[in-house]
Length: 145
Image (tube, rainbow, N blue to C red; front, top):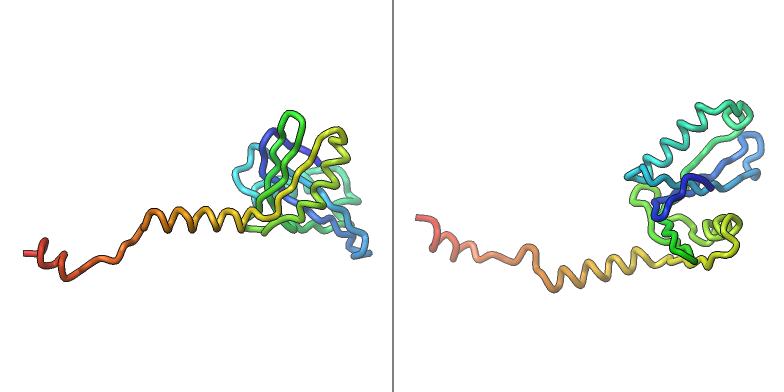
């Protein structure tokens, strides 16, 4: 886990041993300077390729398996959200890893972000109709001469 700031997008990257596909490690990566989850992944791959760790480069493959957000609060951490490109990360796995680095913090996760977002959008759309049906005959009669 590295490059995490107060409020970040984050991704989960699975590192898979090319010789033994069962040998997997999970990395949580975030970067406050990246606007999109894909930018975090690109930066991660670039960092790996520029590293001196030949074993890592030659023997492992990497796959982004999901994204979300991490919000650092004074005494707690909130893990939630999803990536539109990679889907939602398994926040319980992110929590396990983050807890190792921040053992004294209360860590909360939310897996219902998509459901909550859809409910909020539907509520807004129902309250504020964006494309009401137009009476074309009336408009032609009144405005076309």
